[in-house]
Image (tube, rainbow, N blue to C red):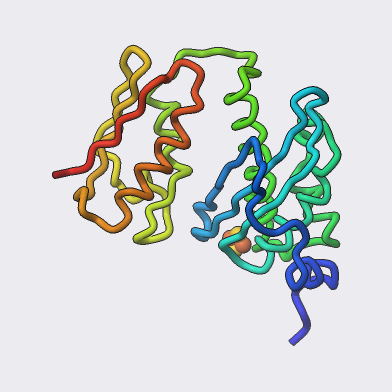
Length: 211
Ligand code: FES
């Protein structure tokens, strides 16, 4: 059987560049793919004056293409300003790798979304969001779609674990259909807070478990 991956994909898969957590990161994001349950985290160190990406690393919890595309986007993004890095497309990432099998196109989408979400995280935590819309239940739900339910590797919304969302005077309350004693309750709470807290008009996030 012929190898479905280009040499470059195999190279980045076997020797991924810029792997691991970035100790002095000032932005990060984790994105999951609904197509397969794989995940990628992106860490950025952005220069607060020049808004240039001085350093970028990634961690992959997924397939070979996930690892290879995570690796290539760190190379594409390093040294760019955040505005330039926002324009990196999944097509560019895939082309840079010499192409991916069509079934694996979503892997490059995932890596690029991870990079964009990390930039968004920087903008939100540094007061750079230009369009300041009031947070809605829909926006909270959209963000909860990025929190994985570790029991099954799909997001909290898709697995119907969210039983309620309330947004009131700067406070967001999220109800989760899991007992507080569940082994993943703490991880889920932390991830929900991480996703919701950066919203500019939110100053408190409460995660309620079912009993
Ligand atoms: Fe989904 Fe690769 S198979 S990220």
